[in-house]
View 1 (cartoon, rainbow, N blue to C red):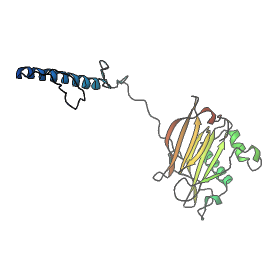
View 2: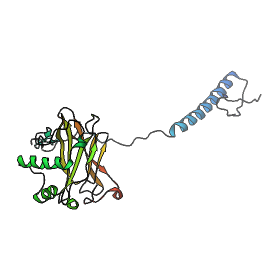
View 3: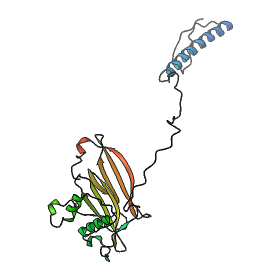
Length: 256
């Protein structure tokens, strides 16, 4: 008697196998059929597993920690933090100026503030400018075209809701000194004294930001100054190197 045997429906594959009425022959046929089915299933599974499986990349390199060079040498001396206003990082008052009872620093003459600052620096024997630049500053009223003092700017840099005075003075070598003044109990106080060759000076969220060129093309130094309520001065809070496309970078001699 000849018949047809169909393998399991999960594999959906038909195979023709001779069936004999003898029990021993039937067991042999079923065993052969089962072997065939299992072999096919194994081939299918093996083929799926081989796709997308990770392959060994070979022996990994050993992991090692950092190696300190010259471990016996002490660290290099670190520079002291930059003073915000005076030599000791405290506000520098200008008592020679009259008190401002209104609390509005816009009522103060900018030229009188600068003259008082120059006099105070001379008394401390710490002039901020060379003699030629200082002479031009003092002669601004008579020779405005040669005056190196830029137009005053007013911004709230201390978060008290009141404007502070920002002064910029450009020296002969294009170095720009930036002074910031605040009224405290009616007295004009300098709270920032810094200088550089800025490409631009910005105020963002109460921070004064100065961008300067570097010797590496395309890179700029971005220095951020912010108000410190404890020391009552503006301090340097961050210095970053930023990449700028060449088209957006001005020449160092250009005024921001």
